[in-house]
Length: 173
Image (cartoon, rainbow, N blue to C red):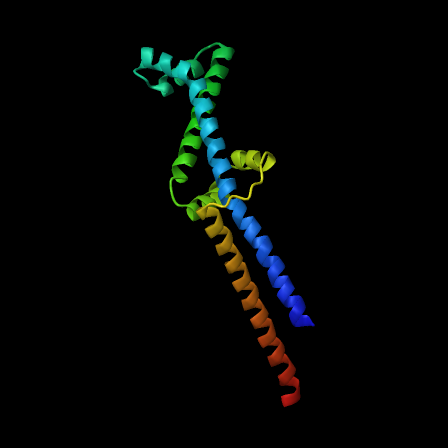
């Protein structure tokens, strides 16, 4: 009876792992599109300031920010801070997109471990589930299912081995 339960448990876990694995490429794709959209938006918002920096400071945004920061007027100082924050945001999104220029497993790892928290949270909040049947999704889902099943089988084998050792040792004395 326990073998039947174990087999069904393996099938259920394999199905769950497959479904989760099928979502990974879709999640990475939605993450990538969101970062790209935010980068485009921040670039548009920075463009007027870049035009001013081009006209008066040879394109050096740091000089424009310093001019605002060193101003005696509080509104200009705060405007300099806002421009600086936009520049930092643009750099953050640019670096994130550059890190996504690799294969799917590396992209998934990046999103999970080093991805932009704000972008990840936005994708999670507005994630649209899909079951894509393209090559990447099937390979990732199948690979995840196989890996989980292998780990479960390994743990089950170690448990049985440990159980067999434990049941023999008291009688041997």
